Image 1: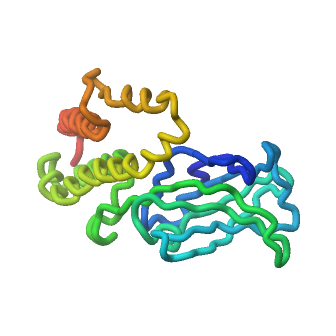
Image 2: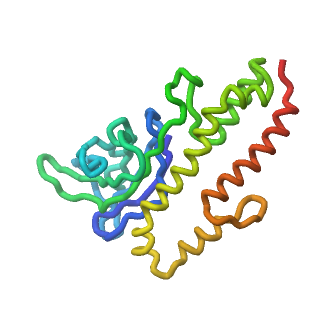
Image 3: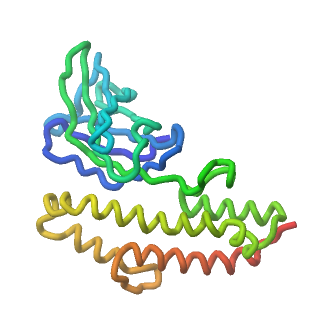
Length: 236
């Protein structure tokens, strides 16, 4: 299943495609589908091969094959793997286009952000939390399997939960620091920055000093709501 869709140009100076958080350790799920364009028109990839190219941490070059989905329309798919996700935080990449032995073009760079799995090993929890939905599913399964109530779940998962919560703040802070220079270049009027400022307002309408604080406040609010809700779940 495609997780992100993007348009990547071989001629435009920038390819800003938003935040792509890929989680280290995921297999066959972190899929990017892109339309490759040249001068705003789809690039015909008939008879071509396309490769994902990156220099991880500015040290380790990798080249991984992408799948051509529709050659005439320039549509490709790339599934992030252990090579492209071997290092955490912001990475840069591009797609190169080859015909036979010849390199015929490449897209401008784009960024993606590698986040880590919370659980130390898959055996600790059966799986790790990729999102709040995964956390809720784990919590519900714990209760439905008669292992205890919400408090018991929290005691059993305390270390993992705190690590997960802290990772949300760390990942966002690191990402924002990594794109400051990009924002200055592509947003001289400050429109995007103004929208980011508005994003400091939480679910309850309270403005915070940073988005990370707002995310933690929302998480605490949802945490309390979930606690009340889960106490009413029937199990047994």
